[in-house]
Length: 148
Image (cartoon, rainbow, N blue to C red; front, side):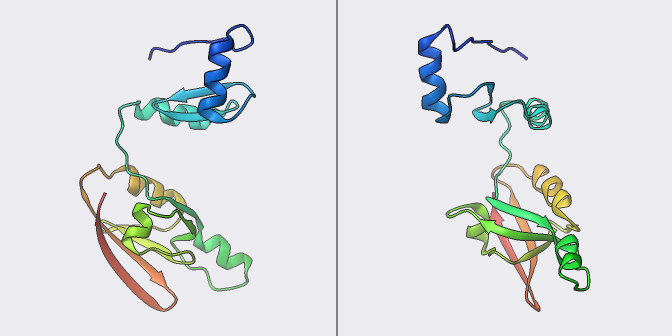
């Protein structure tokens, strides 16, 4: 993979571009396929390099946690799935009807037992494809289909 190494302490235009792009003056800043990494986040860097800069992986705009861990900490019976902590406005998640507090249990007939399962399921989707999503909201099971 090609890269450009820039010393912003010696290149004022590059320093200005850094601030314009990230709002940050700290280094290192690494940009891979339009994704900005502030600091040296090796796992995130490896992830972006592995998927390549031309990836069209959909973004659902969800912040999730393992539902079983959260329910156990609360002293409740473990519930398996990805607990939604936040949904970004105008995101695919919001368009599908997912709300904060929902527990995602399935994508395209693939079980979602935790946040990692959800990440893997989303990684298998391609832009323009359909996704069937199942989640729990309270005692209700909800199904939705969305084009990603």
